Amino acid sequence: MKPLIVANWKMNPQSLTEAKQLFNSLKKGIKNVKNVEVVICPPFLYLSQLQTTNYKPHLGAQDVFWEEKGAFTGEISPKMLKDSGCKYVIIGHSERRRYLKETDEMINKKLKVTLKRKLSPILCIGETRKERGQGKTQTILKNQLKKALSKISAFNIQNSKLAIAYEPVWAIGTGKACSPREAKKSLDVIKKVISKIYDKKLAKTIKILYGGSVNGKNAASYIFEANFQGLLVGGASLDPREFVILVKAVSRS
Ligand code: 13P
Picture 1 (cartoon, protein in one colour):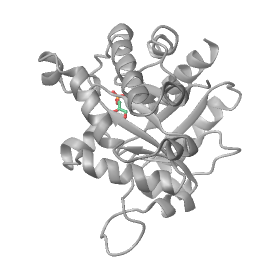
Picture 2 (tube, helix red, strand yellow):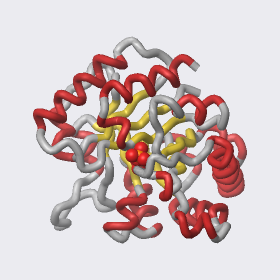
Picture 3 (tube, helix red, strand yellow):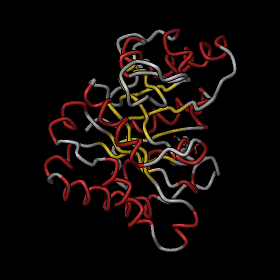
């Protein structure tokens, strides 16, 4: 399975000029990289301004609304994303769960419309520091997955290529990445839950990504030691040099 590396720029950079510069440096750096699929998720405003060549890289959004059109001030529909050249969309990021009070039910609705419109969702799940301390990681992951995937058919998942990102909240932006060994335990739980909701065959086709303080040095270990099929990268994706090193490390291994 081709590893999927997703760059989540979050609310950066602050101008279109900088966004174009960053995007073009990344594009140039990964031009000859093989065997890795790279997705860049800039803020909505920059999407239609960034030109990809032969989907290298792909474009993705950081969020989407669950309705298709109408009176929903400030929201962005799946069709608008497709029209701006997006193939992927991040759903349920922990920062949205935390700052915008996104619930599992909202995430479920967003997943449904995204799959219906044939965008590929990257569903984010993960436990907080407190939950980890209380030994609740497995339960949290199970609950988040079950609720997010409620009443979604195997057919829709396969058709639109759902990916799941395991992002322990305590590892995001802290420089303290989850060790590949610990992350592998969560990966196994995720696979098990998917096999239970659907079946083993489907579980094998879903890419599971790791995210949380990934950098050029530790990237390859999640793919090669822990068997993740991709990475969701925040901070390191804003530094073209670091990000290109990271992508190359995964493509080599
Ligand atoms: P960092 O790579 O900055 O820890 O962010 C991870 C993340 O939240 C990606 O979605």
